[in-house]
Image (cartoon, rainbow, N blue to C red; front, side, top):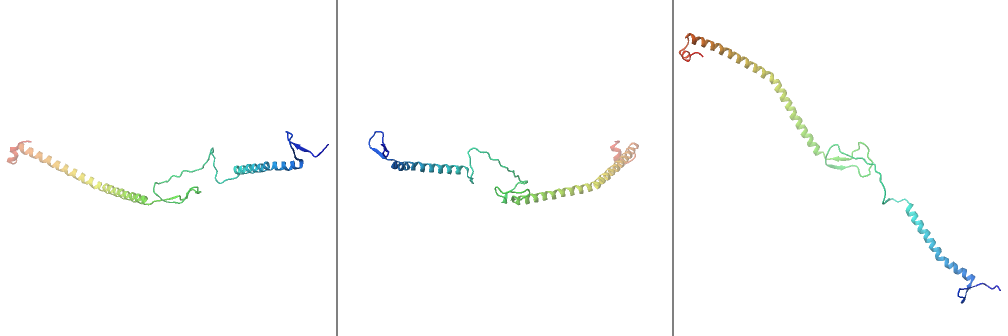
Length: 180
């Protein structure tokens, strides 16, 4: 009663192919699944490599960047003529970073030298005036002494004229003028 097995479909129509043909058909039916699995494994591998492989350009939507920077301020103001350092260059303390236009500084030095010369002339004038003050003071003292002598002479002269006028002696002019 055992014959080679024959597969019939559910309706019971025609008998199906023998088992050896069914195994080949099953292999043919697995072929698309195997290809799909290989494609999925390759896709997952590419995605994982893309996520975890190092990249030169890093980006993100939610990140924090910590930067170490230093503020550079000039000691003097001026127009920049030449720049010796570029972005992201390492610099050391005291290294020249820029060259400034020297015309502004030369004019400021010339103005300061002119002001210094003026101030030195004022100091020399004050020193000369101070040296002259001794002789000016001496001249004023001499004028005071002369004025005191003229006052003394005028007082003596006035007493004499008063005496002459009271005694009736002297010129007619003095007698007519009368006592003072």
